[in-house]
Image (cartoon, rainbow, N blue to C red; front, side, top):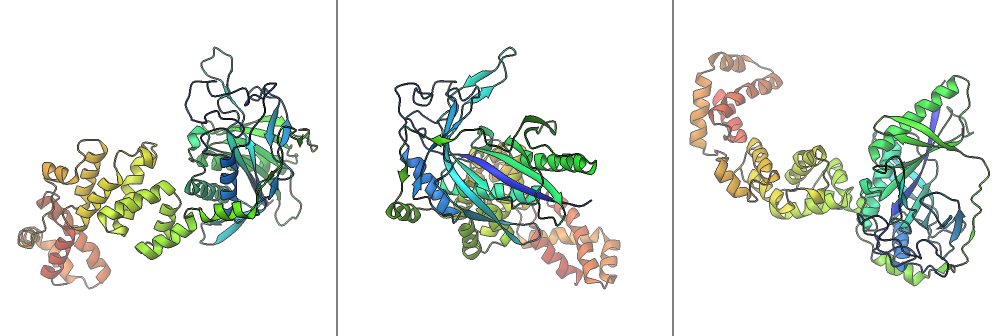
Length: 483
């Protein structure tokens, strides 16, 4: 039987405010456990929450960026449940009147088409603490530093139909919030966490199937794996005549396994009611206009500018524009290296490959944008060959030196572009390869001749100790072989 996959996301985005949503406690990551949790964060008797105005500004920024309706009047409710990392017994959140209403994000699909994913709403709420299960001799510990950290929870409509589409949406959302500066986007620190709702229905049916929710996925890779795993699990159940149970599940990416966390009834048992300690928050048009005027450049606009300003193709501009930090790195490097296309190639190629291999972010890269720009400038002016440039990048990356020109000089990597010297090498190599020369000159097919031409480049680069200018070598070869 054929099935349609239906996916919706709930994404928790930790806002980059310096203090918590209802108290002055710090939100800085990495402090000793339970050193940044005040009496207000724990709702101790005699304390009252005070809304953080910056959290509202950030939420409105997000709403404007995704073309959403902004709630002029938003109300906080208490969501009642007890969990070890929420000892006060309720979470302050928004339900009936959220700060951000319906909006949308457009994503690019692999087939070149664009798909619109609708956002149902996004609401402000406080984060819970964190349960720690390691190094406690079989017991769990609770760190309440995160309790009260401001979040916006983005709830989509079930508009995605594959793991690839869900990941494309998540990446686009990540690029938007980091471009806005409202979230640092560090998935490893829990700055964005994804809950994935998955269901299957017979192909073409209008009736949605029973959905499951897989919670707290903190990487794009794990999210994609979790969706594929859940689709296969549900498909197996349905095709064997069973029924999918509505439940919350947890996914272990290291083992590619999921397990049931709790079943969910149809009725909502959270007993929401308006928070008696917080008045409704009213936002006027002047505030919204002020926020709109302060919005930074967003990924789609940046992508279009990279194409028009730097002449980049759609793929390169999309890859760079989707990451705010990488975009800034690129533009700083171009300022040094001048050649935008070559700079993009090196950033998306060698530079990004090294970051990925070492699991580093752009901010953690040991090579600065200025250094990479200087490296590109030496490739562009024919001082360095591609092979030589890789050696210079390696030296920069390892901290051997911070100066591009000093590395070139010390390692003798300066490319030979002296036409006379190169011609002499070509004459010597051609004289040592008479059979290949005869075969090349006897071949009429231009494509085959071009391929055969490459056979001379290896010996030439060896003769020049890797320092001959490949472009000039190619031009001299064609001229001497009588192409």
